[in-house]
Image (cartoon, rainbow, N blue to C red; front, side):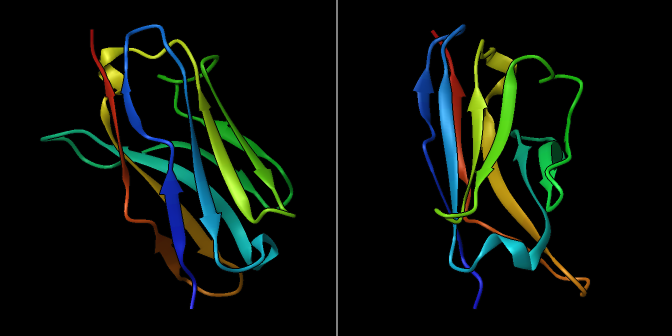
Length: 117
């Protein structure tokens, strides 16, 4: 059974940094892609960044130049380094993994990120 566990959220001041981690219970090569989504109160869940098995990455326009997604296959972990955080980055951040060869997506439980002074 696939499990994704996110850690690293918290409260940070504007301009600060956080690093989110998503640890998978299986090797990352079973996924086509892994990514980070976020959902703010009253808003739809949106893609923040994702990384494919071929290491291609893409970012939402709102986070380009500030956030970096990366993966460590040995640790079965995907990271989201978030710099220059803004209040509008406040949301619950979810890890997502798309299984290869099947239309199946897995989600983590979410981790709260709050950017406030």
